[in-house]
Image (tube, rainbow, N blue to C red):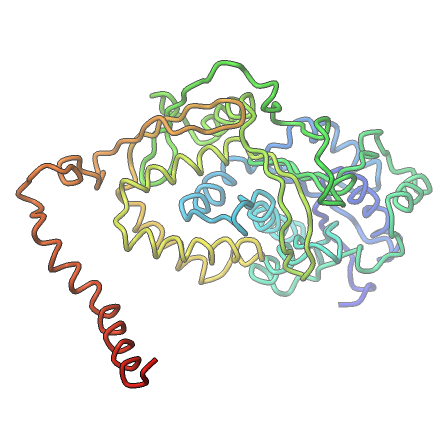
Length: 410
């Protein structure tokens, strides 16, 4: 589809400098096509204030805002957490699994409006361009995707600000921050600025969600998280809907400095990037879920689940959410979670999550089995035969090695 055939485009819009500048750029470069903005409310809070007026003033004909917070938690955050997916040991995928949800609704708005194309503000160096576009391919392969960062001459923040001034795009002072940030209910990421050199320690003023461990309360606080089939459902004995539960845990964990992570990761496009993430509730709930699994899952299931967790994390990071593989992995995970129901108690203190207890009616830990007392369920004499069989390959290898040494005289 050529530029002449694009009469209406739906733009994934955040209200930041880049997407604000894209509105007039699309109209200027695609022969006055109509630009409709779409924003997903994933918990950005004050970032959404005044967004409609700003989009219209930038040249858009209208703005859609969809509250996707519940869907985000139910269909993306919790399934990924149940899978135990962590990318490259530390990253809890806060940006990664938000993108396919945004792209899904972007495609739906395009269908509603009869648009020819969708557009996004992702750069040609990052992962997000892949996540948006692969999702669009999966859900509506006929839509054209416009990625201005791969087309235009704007190459710096200064260029973007100049373009904004030329076409009367409203720009606020906060957009001049040295950091590039992505915020949703699950996390807040920081890139750029001082972080471009991984030797630099992040400055405290950069953090926006979490209290520094040094300034966190001097008294520890306990929290109990209840799970049903791998999903968190209660806090301190009170059953809560997903959004209220997550919001409450976020505030408590952030108060105690929980969830800061400084990560150098491998991008899908081949280069490394350095980012700092604030993920208070996500970090706490991931830990609590792991602790409950430790008593509810048998050895083999846990080992296989850990293998698949790595693949699940890679799949999510690479933007392959809408695939049969992800559905198949979810089916496996759901079976493993059928008895992951119980309570986890944690102590929060100055950035630390300290285990204070876990229990479940489905616990496979039995004190009577694990103790040193003589019990009917386990005869200690049976261990001798087990060790003989378990170590047999090692024994045979050693006998052969000694025999060969004897023949050679060495």
